[in-house]
Amino acid sequence: MATLTIVRVKCNTKEDYIGKDDIYLRVNGKRYKVGRFSNNTSEEVGKSWAFDDEIEVQIWEQDEDPDDKIGEHTFHASEAGGGVKKQNYSGHGASYDLWYKIE
Image: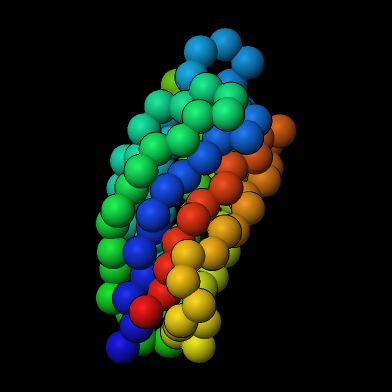
């Protein structure tokens, strides 16, 4: 069994033209609110999930109309070790970095 910890999320470029992005994660289909982001801002997350072989993490931007999926990535237990790493998510004109570790 491995553990994925999301350390921090940083907005490089937000998706919304006006106002802040309301960002949440979907981890294996379950929703977790992260925060509101402007360009070049970040939020500490500090949430962990145990998993067996792999776990999917998506970043979404909440909207009045349908929410926008910024991107997704599947993490694997075989990636365990090596400390904190960074994964970029880009889509709908937005770019976010997610810092994580797998133990």
